Image (tube, one colour):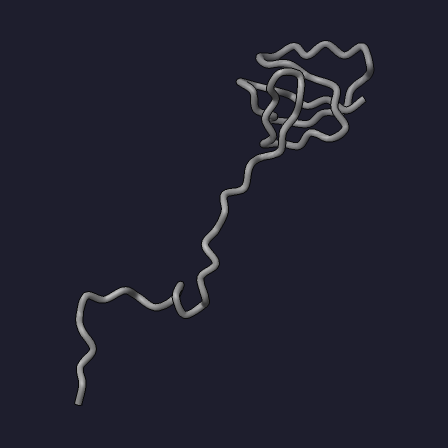
Length: 74
């Protein structure tokens, strides 16, 4: 069976062990075929990490340094 090792509400490892396996370390091993390392476990459910929204900046906006100087006109 596939187990998700959960410590402090976060999946820290995935192991494969027999059905009667007893996890001997801190945390607990919970049967799951879906959970991945980094997922959270709360109220009997596994949840994937929430991805932060990134600003859609253009390449120029992300590579041009900001300056406090006004442009020089010739």
